[in-house]
Length: 164
Image 1 (spheres, rainbow, N blue to C red):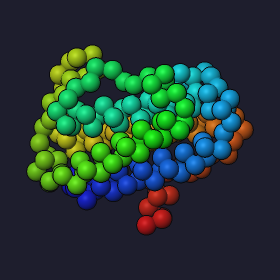
Image 2: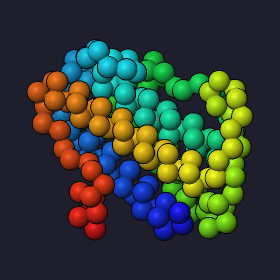
Image 3: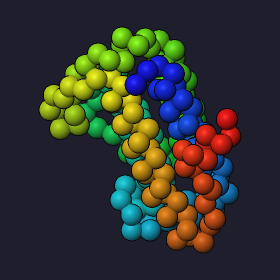
């Protein structure tokens, strides 16, 4: 995987999140916070906090830190607060992406898991995982939106490619 491909994946991730967040912004507070029996707090809010938290942790790892926990719902209590924090994270991600070299992407990078266990993988694999993880959980949010009788928006990679 090269720098151009990684950048394209992160551009896709930003686009897909933006598309979905536009739909989520139309929800009532009750819908946004409703426990629908899903993981991560049961609903949309908890799932979005999880996606954001995972992206935050991975970026921290790439910068040489190993956080020991994900942020919780209480730390990001509203969509507005979460959106603000996510915007700041995107700026940090963009700066990190600009700093990448082809060589850096290939280098193995060691980090500690949330359980404190060491793990080593090439940076490009870690970065690819983050986008895949976010895509997986956006799919869960799509299901949650349908449970609320809200029409979701398509966020497939091929849909993004068609916008280019």
